[in-house]
Length: 263
Image (cartoon, rainbow, N blue to C red; front, side, top):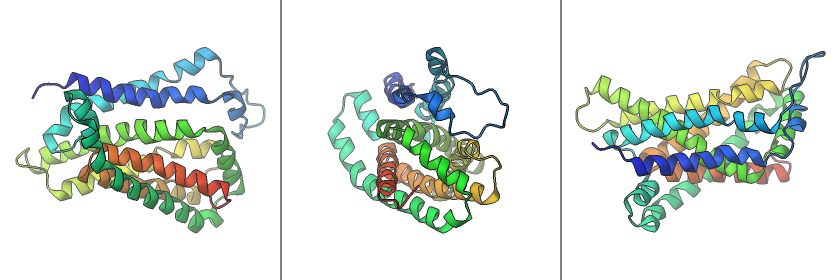
């Protein structure tokens, strides 16, 4: 199967937009003020050069994820319909239409699920985390949430990691024969969702002096629930439906925060 170079560059460029959107954060040094550094710790300073350098690592991870997806997704029946249509000169609008409704439903369900999880576990969370998380949200502009969360994270976790899991399980369990069974997709969806949840722990831990079990459970549970929804959408409809859901979930959570319903 020939490597789809155009698809690779389309998806990687889309993901880079999400990474570069962090340049919209006007004052990263003020953002560091949220972190409860131990007394006497020298707080680092973000220079313009450091800002650009901080984008290199995620750009490399993104490159690997996009590369894996472009190579492996066609082998296991996963797809990015809109990007593939753009790469082949096909009808982009026709490819996009089937992604819209599942993406909207998934985004509303995912955002609501995260808010309900916060309601259920909120009483067990340290006020320090709640306050820090609220302040963190104020620093993240909506474009960054939509572009990085909706595009970049989906390329990394679903297009790259989940696709790899499906391919490995298919090769090991089915010896690469036939099409992957539903159980393979379900397993990959769950594992990638949990990894997605775990991936949010470093930021959460930075907001508190002492990480707790309740904080760990909250972060992993809330994000894993959405990860399962996004993984299902990717499997059944295509990557863009998961991207729409991810972006919309951020809108739901941000809207809820304005009304004091979410942190």
